[in-house]
Image (cartoon, rainbow, N blue to C red; front, side, top):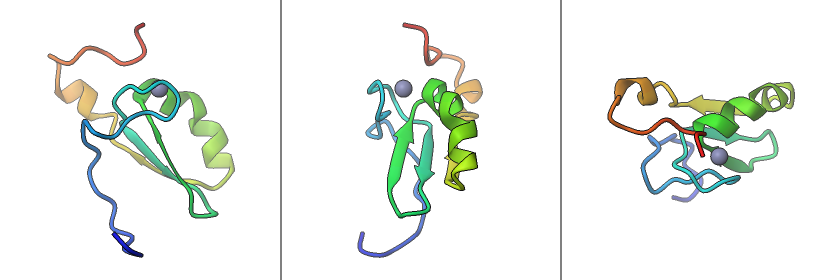
Length: 75
Ligand SMILES: [Zn+2]
């Protein structure tokens, strides 16, 4: 809320901006914009985002911690 800069943990309500899958990466752009990506798209765009000096919050490690969840990007 407001101008707070606290980064919250991504939840099932957070969806990939590209495909609508559950988001595991939150990207904050230098200009202040924010993008959400699933594991697949997050890694696909990671290099370009890093080159743009975007801040990447990567929570994709939770995928390996929850083996009952289906892997992202297998459609
Ligand atoms: Zn995606």
